Length: 143
Image 1 (cartoon, rainbow, N blue to C red):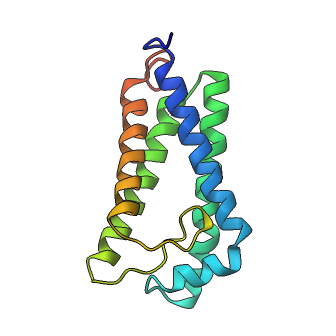
Image 2 (image 1 turned 90 degrees about the vertical axis):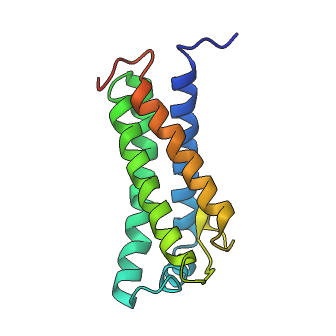
């Protein structure tokens, strides 16, 4: 039976797997992901930088969350960092979709289009990350 103590652990591990999967998917298709980023309306230099920075951030946070869970230390802080990254994703997608465009999002290295589904997924994952960050059951807050 799942107890309240185990739920934040499972949520943090789920976030870790999602972030690792997303980062690896983008790296596997790094050249097409750079083109995807360019389609968001950023310049060539920014597109190249973002196409490296986004998967690096996802992989770093995914590994950080997994390590924090294993060590039972800094889980809340890592979840807060993941929540912050997801908030940036939400704001970016809303800004782009708000212009009436629906370019590929590049989520998980795919060519799916930005829209309510991709925004909703990022919001949902952000809420999950925030719940882990604020709750910290079983880990102690900010430890």
